[in-house]
Image (cartoon, rainbow, N blue to C red; front, side):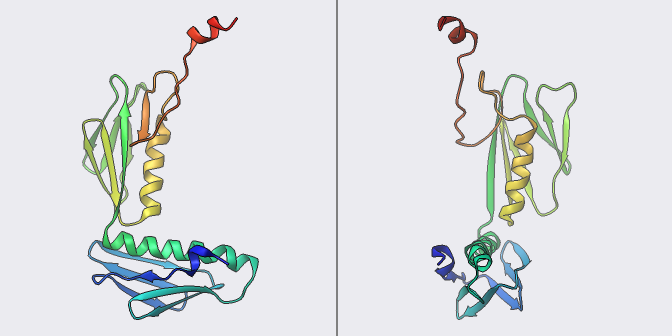
Length: 181
């Protein structure tokens, strides 16, 4: 039994949910999202709650039960509150700037990197912090990960792009290597 899947999803007052077979459309103050769920999962609305259950108890449906419930809860939370990821840039000469609908990154390479921002997302830059926001949690996380992938933090000096609050394990380098012998 899925512990996550058993929990009902509360629908906030400003959000409307429309269920047509396996397709669920959610509208809220920040926008609208829709997603098609697998046939093994049954989604039903009861008053101001959504209940997700498997149609037939199989290993596949048990695996999808909690996932489907979480994806649906993320959709509802996204259209009501939204999601945000913060990335910190650390390093001498490393900087980011917005240029229309693209993000310009100067990260110590021989050329600046331009990333086109997806339509449904908002990006803002404040000194050495890039803030990625939007209503789709999956899309926000994926775009933030693609920014971080360009120059992940390195363990010797800590230079690179990291998530806010991420701890980078540091190494001592040559000093420690010579002292051990």
